[in-house]
Picture 1 (cartoon, rainbow, N blue to C red):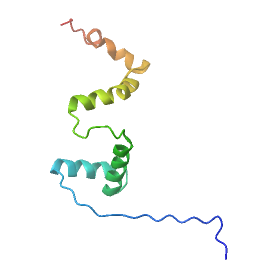
Picture 2 (picture 1 turned 90 degrees about the vertical axis):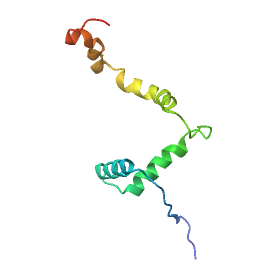
Picture 3 (picture 1 turned 135 degrees about the vertical axis):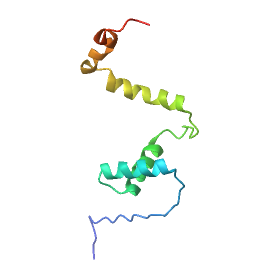
Picture 4 (picture 1 turned 180 degrees about the vertical axis):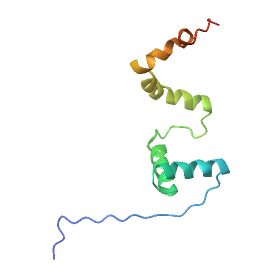
Length: 98
């Protein structure tokens, strides 16, 4: 009997329990609902992103470090022609410098 060309994947799951703040629970639920997926799947995808980062990444990063890490992505989003009109917001709203 030959099973050539047939592959079987076995997915294993482990149930873990974590303590979240009420705000985190609400945000997780909102995120899951808006993406039409389970809260577990949202957490799974977030962990995939976290685990995909460099292993040398210190999990005790402060807010400033996170801002520095996100800056290149934000610049790609914000540094574009359609947003350039807002670069001169003082002129648009008639506000003086300072």
